[in-house]
Amino acid sequence: MKIVQFNATGLPQAVCDCVERDDPPAPAGNGVTIRIEAFPINPADLLMIEGRYAALPEFPATPGAEGCGRVTAVGPDVTDVRVGDRVIMLDRENFCQVKQTTADQVVKVPDDIDVLQTAMLKVNPPTALMMLRDFVHLAPGDWVIQNAANSAVGDNLIRLAKAADHRTVNIVRRESLIEPLKAIGADVVIVDGDDLAARVAAETGGGAIRLGIDAIGGDMVRRMADCLADGGTMVNYGLLSGAPCVMTSHQLVFRGLTLTGFWLAAALRAMARPDLETLYGDLAGRIRDGALHVPVERTYAIEDIKAALEHAGREGREGKILVTPNGPVT
Ligand SMILES: NC(=O)c1ccc[n+]([C@@H]2O[C@H](COP(=O)([O-])OP(=O)(O)OC[C@H]3O[C@@H](n4cnc5c(N)ncnc54)[C@H](OP(=O)(O)O)[C@@H]3O)[C@@H](O)[C@H]2O)c1
Image 1 (cartoon, rainbow, N blue to C red):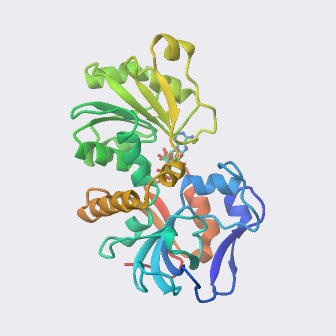
Image 2 (cartoon, rainbow, N blue to C red):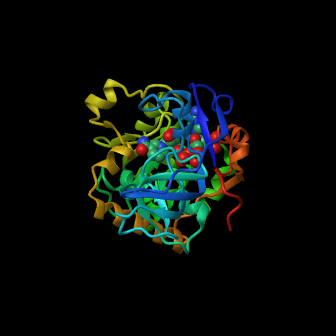
Image 3 (spheres, rainbow, N blue to C red):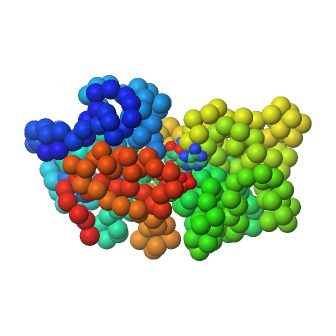
Protein backbone atom coordinates (compact mmCIF):
# COMPACT_ATOMS: atom_id res chain seq x y z
CA MET A 1 0.00 0.00 0.00
CA LYS A 2 0.99 3.64 -0.48
CA ILE A 3 1.45 6.06 2.38
CA VAL A 4 2.70 9.65 2.68
CA GLN A 5 5.77 10.05 4.88
CA PHE A 6 8.22 12.74 5.92
CA ASN A 7 11.49 12.40 7.82
CA ALA A 8 12.16 16.05 8.59
CA THR A 9 10.01 19.15 8.99
CA GLY A 10 10.11 21.68 6.16
CA LEU A 11 8.32 22.77 3.01
CA PRO A 12 5.57 20.13 2.67
CA GLN A 13 6.08 19.36 -1.03
CA ALA A 14 9.84 19.08 -0.47
CA VAL A 15 9.86 16.81 2.59
CA CYS A 16 6.84 14.55 1.92
CA ASP A 17 6.99 11.47 -0.30
CA CYS A 18 4.52 8.81 -1.33
CA VAL A 19 6.17 5.51 -0.34
CA GLU A 20 5.29 1.80 -0.53
CA ARG A 21 4.73 -0.13 2.65
CA ASP A 22 3.38 -3.62 3.43
CA ASP A 23 -0.36 -3.81 3.99
CA PRO A 24 -1.23 -4.01 7.70
CA PRO A 25 -1.87 -7.51 9.09
CA ALA A 26 -5.42 -8.69 9.87
CA PRO A 27 -6.68 -6.66 12.83
CA ALA A 28 -6.58 -8.22 16.30
CA GLY A 29 -8.72 -7.35 19.37
CA ASN A 30 -10.59 -4.11 18.73
CA GLY A 31 -8.56 -3.27 15.62
CA VAL A 32 -10.17 -1.92 12.46
CA THR A 33 -8.73 -1.74 8.94
CA ILE A 34 -9.98 1.04 6.67
CA ARG A 35 -9.54 1.56 2.92
CA ILE A 36 -9.28 5.36 2.75
CA GLU A 37 -11.54 6.91 0.10
CA ALA A 38 -10.56 10.57 0.45
CA PHE A 39 -8.66 12.98 2.65
CA PRO A 40 -8.37 16.78 2.48
CA ILE A 41 -5.12 18.69 2.94
CA ASN A 42 -5.88 21.26 5.63
CA PRO A 43 -3.75 24.21 6.80
CA ALA A 44 -3.08 22.32 10.06
CA ASP A 45 -1.55 19.42 8.06
CA LEU A 46 0.81 21.86 6.37
CA LEU A 47 1.68 23.42 9.74
CA MET A 48 2.41 20.00 11.19
CA ILE A 49 4.73 19.09 8.33
CA GLU A 50 6.45 22.48 8.71
CA GLY A 51 6.98 21.78 12.44
CA ARG A 52 4.73 24.67 13.49
CA TYR A 53 1.81 22.71 14.97
CA ALA A 54 1.04 21.86 18.60
CA ALA A 55 3.63 19.09 18.91
CA LEU A 56 6.60 18.03 16.79
CA PRO A 57 6.02 14.76 14.91
CA GLU A 58 8.08 11.62 15.49
CA PHE A 59 9.84 10.42 12.33
CA PRO A 60 9.08 8.81 10.01
CA ALA A 61 5.78 10.68 10.28
CA THR A 62 2.55 10.50 8.31
CA PRO A 63 0.34 13.60 8.18
CA GLY A 64 -3.42 13.75 7.95
CA ALA A 65 -5.91 15.04 10.50
CA GLU A 66 -8.97 13.60 8.78
CA GLY A 67 -10.54 11.63 5.95
CA CYS A 68 -13.09 8.92 5.39
CA GLY A 69 -13.06 5.34 4.21
CA ARG A 70 -14.69 1.92 4.23
CA VAL A 71 -13.99 -0.68 6.87
CA THR A 72 -12.40 -3.74 5.24
CA ALA A 73 -11.66 -5.88 8.32
CA VAL A 74 -12.40 -5.82 12.05
CA GLY A 75 -10.83 -7.60 15.02
CA PRO A 76 -12.75 -10.25 16.98
CA ASP A 77 -13.70 -7.83 19.81
CA VAL A 78 -15.29 -5.21 17.56
CA THR A 79 -19.08 -5.07 17.85
CA ASP A 80 -20.33 -1.69 16.68
CA VAL A 81 -18.52 -1.33 13.34
CA ARG A 82 -18.82 -3.79 10.48
CA VAL A 83 -16.98 -4.55 7.27
CA GLY A 84 -18.41 -2.24 4.59
CA ASP A 85 -19.31 0.62 6.97
CA ARG A 86 -18.16 4.10 6.00
CA VAL A 87 -16.30 5.80 8.83
CA ILE A 88 -14.36 8.94 9.66
CA MET A 89 -11.22 8.64 11.75
CA LEU A 90 -10.73 10.53 15.02
CA ASP A 91 -6.98 9.94 15.11
CA ARG A 92 -4.32 11.34 12.76
CA GLU A 93 -1.93 9.79 10.20
CA ASN A 94 -4.62 9.46 7.53
CA PHE A 95 -2.61 10.28 4.36
CA CYS A 96 -2.50 6.66 3.18
CA GLN A 97 -4.36 4.03 1.17
CA VAL A 98 -4.99 1.62 4.03
CA LYS A 99 -5.14 2.56 7.68
CA GLN A 100 -5.23 0.46 10.79
CA THR A 101 -6.67 1.87 13.99
CA THR A 102 -8.99 0.85 16.82
CA ALA A 103 -12.79 0.88 16.92
CA ASP A 104 -12.90 3.72 19.46
CA GLN A 105 -11.07 5.92 16.94
CA VAL A 106 -13.72 5.67 14.22
CA VAL A 107 -17.20 7.11 13.91
CA LYS A 108 -19.67 5.44 11.58
CA VAL A 109 -21.19 7.88 9.10
CA PRO A 110 -24.03 7.52 6.58
CA ASP A 111 -22.87 6.25 3.20
CA ASP A 112 -25.49 8.09 1.16
CA ILE A 113 -23.72 11.45 1.40
CA ASP A 114 -21.01 12.93 -0.80
CA VAL A 115 -17.67 11.20 -0.16
CA LEU A 116 -15.51 14.33 -0.47
CA GLN A 117 -17.77 16.27 1.90
CA THR A 118 -17.70 13.31 4.31
CA ALA A 119 -13.90 13.35 4.20
CA MET A 120 -14.08 16.97 5.45
CA LEU A 121 -16.65 16.29 8.19
CA LYS A 122 -14.39 15.75 11.18
CA VAL A 123 -12.53 19.05 11.50
CA ASN A 124 -14.07 22.17 10.04
CA PRO A 125 -17.85 21.77 10.53
CA PRO A 126 -17.64 21.11 14.31
CA THR A 127 -15.03 23.87 14.65
CA ALA A 128 -17.45 26.38 13.13
CA LEU A 129 -20.39 25.02 15.13
CA MET A 130 -18.64 25.08 18.51
CA MET A 131 -17.13 28.53 18.03
CA LEU A 132 -20.57 29.92 17.19
CA ARG A 133 -22.25 28.10 20.06
CA ASP A 134 -19.87 27.83 23.00
CA PHE A 135 -18.37 31.28 23.71
CA VAL A 136 -21.15 33.89 23.46
CA HIS A 137 -24.87 33.23 23.72
CA LEU A 138 -26.20 34.56 20.43
CA ALA A 139 -29.90 35.21 19.93
CA PRO A 140 -31.61 35.24 16.53
CA GLY A 141 -30.64 38.42 14.70
CA ASP A 142 -27.34 38.83 16.60
CA TRP A 143 -24.16 39.59 14.64
CA VAL A 144 -20.89 37.65 14.48
CA ILE A 145 -17.77 38.78 12.59
CA GLN A 146 -15.11 36.47 11.10
CA ASN A 147 -12.06 36.69 8.86
CA ALA A 148 -10.74 34.18 6.30
CA ALA A 149 -14.45 33.92 5.61
CA ASN A 150 -14.00 31.97 2.37
CA SER A 151 -12.09 29.21 4.17
CA ALA A 152 -13.85 25.91 4.81
CA VAL A 153 -14.41 26.90 8.45
CA GLY A 154 -15.70 30.28 7.27
CA ASP A 155 -18.05 28.67 4.74
CA ASN A 156 -19.43 26.30 7.38
CA LEU A 157 -19.81 29.17 9.84
CA ILE A 158 -21.78 31.32 7.40
CA ARG A 159 -24.19 28.46 6.70
CA LEU A 160 -24.56 27.41 10.36
CA ALA A 161 -25.10 31.03 11.44
CA LYS A 162 -27.74 31.50 8.77
CA ALA A 163 -29.53 28.34 9.89
CA ALA A 164 -29.61 29.73 13.46
CA ASP A 165 -30.79 33.19 12.27
CA HIS A 166 -27.56 34.91 13.28
CA ARG A 167 -26.13 37.57 10.98
CA THR A 168 -22.53 37.43 9.74
CA VAL A 169 -19.92 40.02 8.80
CA ASN A 170 -17.29 38.29 6.68
CA ILE A 171 -13.81 39.64 5.96
CA VAL A 172 -12.00 38.38 2.87
CA ARG A 173 -8.96 39.34 0.77
CA ARG A 174 -10.59 39.43 -2.69
CA GLU A 175 -13.56 41.29 -4.10
CA SER A 176 -14.47 38.30 -6.28
CA LEU A 177 -15.61 36.47 -3.11
CA ILE A 178 -18.35 38.95 -2.18
CA GLU A 179 -21.13 37.54 -4.36
CA PRO A 180 -20.32 33.82 -3.82
CA LEU A 181 -20.36 34.26 -0.04
CA LYS A 182 -23.60 36.24 -0.18
CA ALA A 183 -25.06 33.43 -2.25
CA ILE A 184 -24.47 30.94 0.58
CA GLY A 185 -26.02 33.26 3.19
CA ALA A 186 -23.41 35.84 4.24
CA ASP A 187 -25.11 39.07 5.29
CA VAL A 188 -22.12 41.37 4.90
CA VAL A 189 -18.86 40.65 3.03
CA ILE A 190 -16.02 43.17 3.29
CA VAL A 191 -12.63 43.16 1.62
CA ASP A 192 -9.96 43.78 4.26
CA GLY A 193 -8.31 47.19 4.21
CA ASP A 194 -8.25 50.61 5.84
CA ASP A 195 -11.08 51.82 8.08
CA LEU A 196 -12.33 48.30 8.69
CA ALA A 197 -14.36 49.19 11.81
CA ALA A 198 -16.00 52.21 10.13
CA ARG A 199 -16.92 50.17 7.05
CA VAL A 200 -18.31 47.34 9.18
CA ALA A 201 -20.38 49.79 11.27
CA ALA A 202 -21.75 51.34 8.08
CA GLU A 203 -22.84 47.91 6.80
CA THR A 204 -24.42 46.74 10.07
CA GLY A 205 -26.03 50.10 10.87
CA GLY A 206 -23.93 50.17 14.04
CA GLY A 207 -25.42 46.87 15.27
CA ALA A 208 -23.60 45.35 18.25
CA ILE A 209 -21.19 42.53 17.36
CA ARG A 210 -20.37 40.49 20.47
CA LEU A 211 -18.44 37.59 18.89
CA GLY A 212 -15.35 37.75 16.68
CA ILE A 213 -13.80 34.66 15.09
CA ASP A 214 -10.18 34.98 13.98
CA ALA A 215 -8.06 32.56 11.95
CA ILE A 216 -5.25 34.96 11.11
CA GLY A 217 -3.66 36.45 14.23
CA GLY A 218 -1.30 39.44 14.17
CA ASP A 219 -2.66 42.96 13.86
CA MET A 220 -5.81 41.64 12.16
CA VAL A 221 -7.03 40.73 15.66
CA ARG A 222 -6.70 44.32 16.88
CA ARG A 223 -8.47 45.71 13.82
CA MET A 224 -11.28 43.18 14.06
CA ALA A 225 -11.57 43.80 17.81
CA ASP A 226 -12.31 47.44 16.94
CA CYS A 227 -15.47 46.12 15.26
CA LEU A 228 -16.69 44.41 18.47
CA ALA A 229 -19.09 45.92 21.00
CA ASP A 230 -17.69 46.64 24.47
CA GLY A 231 -17.52 43.40 26.46
CA GLY A 232 -17.28 41.32 23.28
CA THR A 233 -15.26 38.13 22.82
CA MET A 234 -12.61 37.38 20.21
CA VAL A 235 -11.94 33.69 19.57
CA ASN A 236 -8.63 32.93 17.84
CA TYR A 237 -8.47 29.49 16.22
CA GLY A 238 -5.82 29.78 13.49
CA LEU A 239 -2.37 31.19 12.86
CA LEU A 240 -2.58 31.88 9.15
CA SER A 241 -0.36 34.99 9.34
CA GLY A 242 2.12 33.27 11.66
CA ALA A 243 2.10 36.41 13.83
CA PRO A 244 1.06 36.55 17.51
CA CYS A 245 -2.43 37.89 18.24
CA VAL A 246 -2.40 41.63 18.98
CA MET A 247 -4.92 43.37 21.21
CA THR A 248 -4.33 46.68 22.96
CA SER A 249 -4.63 47.40 26.67
CA HIS A 250 -7.33 49.90 25.75
CA GLN A 251 -9.36 47.11 24.14
CA LEU A 252 -8.80 44.70 27.02
CA VAL A 253 -9.00 47.06 29.99
CA PHE A 254 -11.28 49.96 29.09
CA ARG A 255 -13.51 48.19 26.56
CA GLY A 256 -13.65 44.88 28.45
CA LEU A 257 -12.96 42.69 25.42
CA THR A 258 -11.88 39.08 25.93
CA LEU A 259 -9.35 37.26 23.75
CA THR A 260 -9.52 33.49 23.94
CA GLY A 261 -8.73 30.45 21.79
CA PHE A 262 -10.37 27.31 20.43
CA TRP A 263 -8.77 23.96 19.53
CA LEU A 264 -11.03 21.22 18.21
CA ALA A 265 -8.68 18.42 19.30
CA ALA A 266 -9.07 19.48 22.95
CA ALA A 267 -12.83 19.95 22.58
CA LEU A 268 -13.27 16.46 21.09
CA ARG A 269 -11.13 14.85 23.80
CA ALA A 270 -13.40 16.41 26.44
CA MET A 271 -16.57 14.99 24.85
CA ALA A 272 -18.34 11.81 25.92
CA ARG A 273 -18.72 9.27 23.11
CA PRO A 274 -22.54 9.62 22.80
CA ASP A 275 -22.21 13.42 22.49
CA LEU A 276 -19.55 12.98 19.83
CA GLU A 277 -21.77 10.63 17.83
CA THR A 278 -24.70 13.06 18.15
CA LEU A 279 -22.48 15.93 16.97
CA TYR A 280 -21.28 14.09 13.86
CA GLY A 281 -24.73 12.64 13.17
CA ASP A 282 -26.17 16.16 13.17
CA LEU A 283 -23.42 17.55 10.93
CA ALA A 284 -23.58 14.59 8.52
CA GLY A 285 -27.34 15.19 8.24
CA ARG A 286 -26.70 18.81 7.33
CA ILE A 287 -24.30 17.69 4.59
CA ARG A 288 -26.93 15.29 3.28
CA ASP A 289 -29.53 18.09 3.25
CA GLY A 290 -27.12 20.36 1.36
CA ALA A 291 -27.09 22.81 4.29
CA LEU A 292 -23.31 22.32 4.55
CA HIS A 293 -21.20 22.07 1.41
CA VAL A 294 -17.60 23.19 1.03
CA PRO A 295 -16.27 23.93 -2.48
CA VAL A 296 -13.59 21.59 -3.83
CA GLU A 297 -10.97 22.99 -6.20
CA ARG A 298 -9.27 19.74 -7.19
CA THR A 299 -8.63 16.14 -6.20
CA TYR A 300 -5.29 14.34 -6.66
CA ALA A 301 -3.97 10.78 -6.68
CA ILE A 302 -1.78 9.88 -3.70
CA GLU A 303 1.21 9.43 -6.02
CA ASP A 304 0.88 13.16 -6.79
CA ILE A 305 1.07 14.17 -3.13
CA LYS A 306 3.82 16.74 -3.76
CA ALA A 307 1.69 18.61 -6.31
CA ALA A 308 -1.33 18.32 -4.01
CA LEU A 309 0.58 19.78 -1.05
CA GLU A 310 1.92 22.65 -3.14
CA HIS A 311 -1.61 23.38 -4.41
CA ALA A 312 -3.08 23.26 -0.89
CA GLY A 313 -0.53 25.86 0.24
CA ARG A 314 -1.45 28.38 -2.47
CA GLU A 315 -3.24 31.65 -1.81
CA GLY A 316 -6.47 32.43 -3.60
CA ARG A 317 -7.85 28.91 -4.01
CA GLU A 318 -11.54 28.55 -4.87
CA GLY A 319 -11.94 25.44 -2.71
CA LYS A 320 -10.28 22.59 -0.87
CA ILE A 321 -7.65 20.19 -2.18
CA LEU A 322 -8.33 16.51 -1.53
CA VAL A 323 -6.57 13.25 -2.31
CA THR A 324 -8.45 10.10 -3.32
CA PRO A 325 -5.77 7.51 -2.52
CA ASN A 326 -7.56 4.48 -3.95
CA GLY A 327 -8.71 6.11 -7.17
CA PRO A 328 -11.42 8.61 -8.09
CA VAL A 329 -14.65 8.59 -6.04
CA THR A 330 -18.14 9.27 -7.27
N1 LIG B 1 -8.27 25.57 16.14
C1 LIG B 1 -8.88 24.55 15.54
O1 LIG B 1 -9.32 23.60 16.16
C2 LIG B 1 -9.02 24.57 14.05
C3 LIG B 1 -9.86 23.66 13.40
C4 LIG B 1 -10.02 23.76 12.02
C5 LIG B 1 -9.33 24.72 11.30
N2 LIG B 1 -8.48 25.56 11.98
C6 LIG B 1 -7.76 26.63 11.27
O2 LIG B 1 -8.70 27.34 10.53
C7 LIG B 1 -8.07 28.01 9.46
C8 LIG B 1 -8.86 27.76 8.19
O3 LIG B 1 -8.79 26.37 7.89
P1 LIG B 1 -9.58 25.82 6.63
O4 LIG B 1 -9.33 24.37 6.48
O5 LIG B 1 -10.98 26.29 6.76
O6 LIG B 1 -8.85 26.66 5.47
P2 LIG B 1 -8.96 26.53 3.88
O7 LIG B 1 -10.33 26.15 3.49
O8 LIG B 1 -7.84 25.68 3.41
O9 LIG B 1 -8.71 28.04 3.42
C9 LIG B 1 -7.56 28.75 3.77
C10 LIG B 1 -7.99 30.18 4.08
O10 LIG B 1 -6.92 30.89 4.67
C11 LIG B 1 -6.82 32.17 4.07
N3 LIG B 1 -5.46 32.62 4.30
C12 LIG B 1 -4.31 31.93 4.14
N4 LIG B 1 -3.26 32.67 4.53
C13 LIG B 1 -3.75 33.86 4.96
C14 LIG B 1 -3.16 35.03 5.48
N5 LIG B 1 -1.84 35.14 5.66
N6 LIG B 1 -3.96 36.07 5.80
C15 LIG B 1 -5.30 35.97 5.62
N7 LIG B 1 -5.92 34.87 5.15
C16 LIG B 1 -5.15 33.84 4.81
C17 LIG B 1 -7.19 31.91 2.64
O11 LIG B 1 -7.53 33.11 2.01
P3 LIG B 1 -7.37 33.32 0.39
O12 LIG B 1 -8.45 32.51 -0.26
O13 LIG B 1 -7.53 34.77 0.23
O14 LIG B 1 -5.99 32.80 0.03
C18 LIG B 1 -8.40 30.99 2.85
O15 LIG B 1 -9.52 31.75 3.22
C19 LIG B 1 -6.64 27.47 9.44
O16 LIG B 1 -5.80 28.38 10.10
C20 LIG B 1 -6.75 26.19 10.25
O17 LIG B 1 -5.53 25.80 10.83
C21 LIG B 1 -8.31 25.51 13.32
